[in-house]
Image (spheres, rainbow, N blue to C red):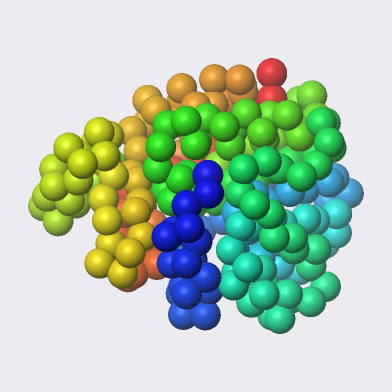
Length: 213
């Protein structure tokens, strides 16, 4: 999961980008109660943990490999528990959390093995019957995206990967890929939607809630 070019991009982005990917708190609350222990993997500057905190959730932890993101989060939300990690392992014991959030994180961990490792680590730290709340980007069919997928598909060997001019490498996913990644979870919710992106475009997306098998 460690990529130093990407790390520099996210450190630089920490001060300038707002992440608009929506969080369906009303859906989340159907499956996770306020006293439960919740981890946000790739928490960025803590915007979703802050929303949970504001809604009465208190056992909250966020991890991110970008020091810039963590610094911004602690500055904006000093009451949150945000921790910088190396990006490879989740630094907690097995069966530690009742729920894990993974919001628009797969998109910047583009390789299958990176994503599989991340989901495996999440499984490890989740309790039995623990909840995964996952949201990310799906393949688009508009001309701009199709040209990007075509241009970078050969370079990266995966359809849906593309580069941004400012340096990030990102990925949009097929629904089949997401279902394969989450095979160790029972699917409770899978809703397709359309998101605003951090650069002001629209993209197909989804949110998923699963229970660890």
